[in-house]
Length: 372
Ligand SMILES: Cc1ncc(COP(=O)(O)O)c(C=O)c1O
Image (cartoon, rainbow, N blue to C red; front, side):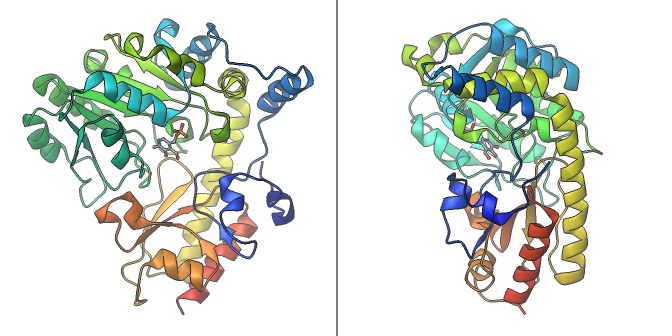
């Protein structure tokens, strides 16, 4: 389920393995140390064998694969005709914002949140408004109601929420549907981490809620759960309002052919592999809790309900400076600095535990040594 040899991992040429020198353990960007799911490897291998490296084709396969996966795993009935491929989730959100906003319209987000959320509104010519999560890292529904009363065009929801790992509850999402309907706000739901909901939590796809199709549009992807980020494919799932028909015609050519092939294979034949991965990540989550408890008990965190990303509050430590810098400079462990996720991230780091037990243990040991 995991590649545990650093020598083998360092042969990878992706961002995770090329951003830092070899003495650094890279636990920053959201890539996992897994080997590809066999169904995905097979389809890619066959494409290479056939020199099948042209443009992605606009066929019905992606819609059928997304609908099958959503139905089996979440009981969410997706109309395959409402599924549109895009190059990645970021491209999908920006193109949706271009359709949904006019110059000067506001787009609301809830930090701490995945850093590109801060840039997407500007790319589409819109203004950003922040309604941070509450202290216990939930959606601030009262704050969102105040913000929605000023009639922003869009709220970009992170469901489940990176970096805090929260799986928003059905009731919270239903309240969001009510607010969006009341104030005429469109909800763009980024559900890239939906397939990574861990044992103990239940994922509610936004569009599966009553009334959500009138106010929402979602983005799904196999790229986080199956480690396919470099292949460039995600899917927009529309509600009742046609939006992708207004995308510029060239958007259709920007999806990666390998990404689309891999996504269809993952969503069609990847359930068993994904179940194994979720079991593995559940173990790593417990393992990390034990390691932090014994080596750095002053770090506080809520083990995430989804993802392989841990949001660590290091403010109780007496170390000077930003913790990510300290862990990198003295410990040679690369983590994401909390401030990248917004002002609420001060004193925090985000750690990627999608790695072997041995690497995780070594990383935490180095981190503890760095602050001693
Ligand atoms: C919430 C969220 N959205 C989007 C992305 C990036 O997705 P893509 O590479 O498909 O743009 C990530 C990557 O980690 C993410 O965490």
